Length: 453
Ligand SMILES: Cc1cc2nc3c(=O)[nH]c(=O)nc-3n(C[C@H](O)[C@H](O)[C@H](O)COP(=O)(O)OP(=O)(O)OC[C@H]3O[C@@H](n4cnc5c(N)ncnc54)[C@H](O)[C@@H]3O)c2cc1C
Image 1: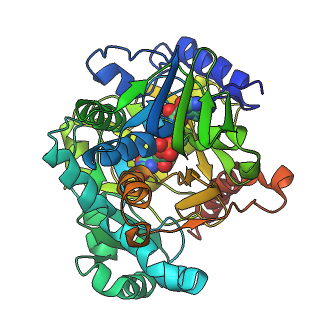
Image 2: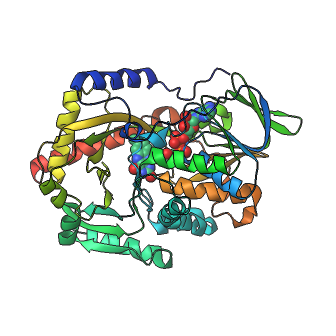
């Protein structure tokens, strides 16, 4: 089976676009900001022989390296193969916001949908922020971890009621959540127009690439073998073992975890059509002047709102603002700078045009439920399907749960493996996430112009 892990129709277009951004603006560059911040790393070897491990992991993003680390903690012999470099997928192009909240659903929605399985799912999300920051501290991982809290505002006259209800639904799982009213929300965020916000003290932000590399280093110190530049091309069953083939090598194991995110569906036909791509542009500004630093997120929360067009902002450790923008595929660098600033000006009470220092494109992959999933594909073959544009914290904890399922008592794992579930109408639906995000943004602008938002 011919295979390129980053293979996707948009790929060439994306690359051309990133180069265009790099050349066009004189300031923007084609790599995520995280690549220019981290110390040089020594590349891992590629897999060029036949090796055996107890568990094979395909994909070195946050899900893969966390699973490797947690299995290594249990003394399991692990080998992980990564197509590019560790963290080069969604993790390394993400905004690094630690948001231990459900993406869209409310806790009661999850209870209705999952029944008995809901409690574990809700605990996974509820505990994910605290677990991530504790793990980072436990292993001394240097990743600009800022446990400054996460804030999720909502517009509308009913916002206060709606969010208080949501906090109530979390119940004993999250007694630390609270709701800020409109006035406090404006003070905490620097944003106008929100009616209330959930304030979550267990969130914050990280440098996501440094997080992946730190988890990987620790997994390696504990005995895991990690290979880069080693895309899995095929997975076959051979005399009771799984055999993961690469161009030059073979990894044989009794159990295999597919943690390749957007690459998963290319590796197993039962995963075809189970996740949809969501291209997102991320930008980082030049460092902000001190008056804006005092006006915008003065307590340094990380923010993602609960609106359909999903506005998010966070600071880097050198006080650049990172924000996201739905990728349209047609914007020039000047358009992007203008549109990002327009959106910031619409939302932030204090705003001056900000120069963009970094612009990059990432692909989040979403499933229909927007909930993390472990998928059982075959005996000894499982997949983590858990991006949903919000997977950093949950995937770290998912790694611990996968390790439990593989090397402990599976019944103790917070979430249980499920069969694959295709997104209905995939051929049309694959364009939906991007279209929904862009049209929500467009609708909000129109409403603002008409003075109704
Ligand atoms: C632009 C953007 C912004 C985001 N912002 C946030 C945020 O602020 N907060 C948050 O929580 N989440 C965010 N996310 C989502 C988050 O990045 C993902 O949920 C998380 O990184 C998924 O982790 P993963 O390990 O499953 O996947 P990935 O990080 O994508 O890792 C999968 C790895 O598998 C490798 N791979 C693919 N195919 C193969 C193969 N055949 N063989 C070997 N390796 C293969 C890839 O190269 C990749 O390194 C964002 C995502 C994007 C794209």
